[in-house]
Image (cartoon, rainbow, N blue to C red):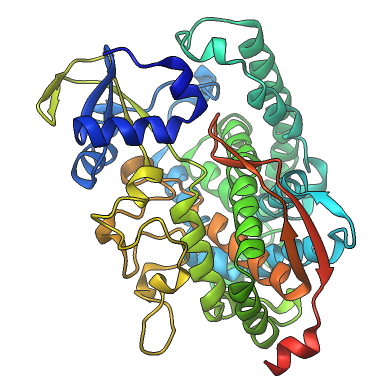
Amino acid sequence: MLPEVGAYEADRPGYLAAGTARFGDVWQVVPKIHFLAGLDATRQVLRRTGQEFEVPRGTFALPRQARVEDAAVEAMRIRTLRHSRVGRNAATLARGAAGLADSWPTGAEADALPLLSAASARMATGYHFGPDADEVMFAEEELVELRTGLGHRYVHLPGWVPSPARLRVRRSQHRLAARIRSVVARRAGDVARRAGDDVRRAGDDARRAGAAPFGTPGGDVLDELIRACSASGVNPAVYLPFRLVTAMVAAREMVGPAAGWVLAALAEHPQWAERIAAEAVSVLPDPDDVDAGTLSRLVLADAFVRETLRLYPPNWLLPRTVALPVEIGGYDLLPGERVLVSPYLLHRDLRYFPDAASFDPGRWLDPGDGRRSGQAGGQAGGQGGGQGGGAYLPFGAGPRICPGASLASAELVLVTAFMARRHLIRRHALTPTTWGAYRPSGLRVLCRPRDLGRVAGC
C-alpha cells in the first residue's frame, strides 16, 4: 500500500489517524515501514528499545571516542535532571521565566517562538553551566537553524550519506562541542585544584547535604558531572561536550515549541489564564526565592501544562528501527525495518482519554478539592496522574524516555505562571507544522499588562 505522498505531507497526523481508523492499530504505511497505534503496541516498542528496537541514527551521532557510556557518569547525569534536583534549583529557572515575562513586548504583536525558544535555551544553559553559562549562551542557535533547514529530500537517505546539509550540521555540532569543551576543561582544572583543599572538602560535605548554592562552584550540574567523570577515570572534556550539546539543542527545539503551545492555549482559554494568574499572584514569591515547594503549589499551571502537552506534544512521532526479528500486531518484522509510534495520536484516543479532543486541564485535577490528580506522578512531564492509564507520553517512555522531562516541565510551569500573571494574551491563527517537532508556526501574540489588583481580588 503506497500512500498519497501529497496527502501525508499536507497533514501527517491526519493521514496517520485516517490510516489507523481504516486498517487498525498496526498497519503498513509503505513496505518496511509500519505505524503502530494503541497503548499496547506503543508500550512494546518504547519499553523494548535497546532490545528488539533501537533509535535510528540521526544528525546527533556521537563521535567514536565519546560513544562508550560510563554507567556511573550516566547515573549522575540522570540524577541531575530528576524532579527533586530540578526543584532544588528552581530559582534559576524562575529568574529566566520572570525575565521573559518582564521583557515581553507589550502593545504590539510579537513573533512568539523566537522569544520563547531563546528563553528556554537561557534557562537550560543556566541550569547546566551555572556561572559559566554566558560563555556558551545561545551558541546552539546556529546548529538549531541548520537542523531545521534540513531539506525533505534528505530525510529518506541513509544516515551515513554525507549530504551537504548534513555535513553543515555536523560541522556546527563540532563547533558547539568545542566551545563547551573549553568550559569543561577549565572547570575540570578548577575542580581538581579544589579537591585537595580542606575548605573545599568541607564545602563538599555541605553540598552533599544540599547547602551549596546553585550557580556557584560546587553547586551546579557541570561540577557534579565533572566529579563523576573523575571518580570513574573518564575524561570529562571528551565525555561531556556532545551530551551537553544535545541538552542545549533540545531546550530550543522541543521546550521552545512546547512553550509556544502553552502561550497559544493561554490566549485561547482566557478563563484558565485568569485562574492561573490568580494562583501565581498568591503563590509566586520573588524569583530568587522560588523552590520545590513553590512548584508544588502551582497546581493550576501544572494542570494547564499537562493538558497542553497532551494535545500538542512537540515530540509527536517517535521512529524506531527493528534490531531483532519480532512479531507485533500480526506482522513479522525483520531487522532494518522501521516502526512509528505517535504520542500525539495516543493522547487523542478516546480509549484512553474521555472527550479527548477537548482542551480540559481540569482532567488533571481531583474533582473534590481542585488539587493535582495523582500528585505522586511529579510535574507535567510525568506519566502519573489520573488520566490515560499510562497512555500519557509527552516525553516518551522506556529506556529512552527524555531524561530532561522534569527540567522541561518545570520551565513550562514557570513560564505559564509568570506570563499569565503579567499579561493578557491574544493571538491570531497559527499553522501547526510537523517537520521535526510539532510546533505552532506563525504564532504571533499581542500582550497587554494584566491588572494585578483585579486578579488579586478575584
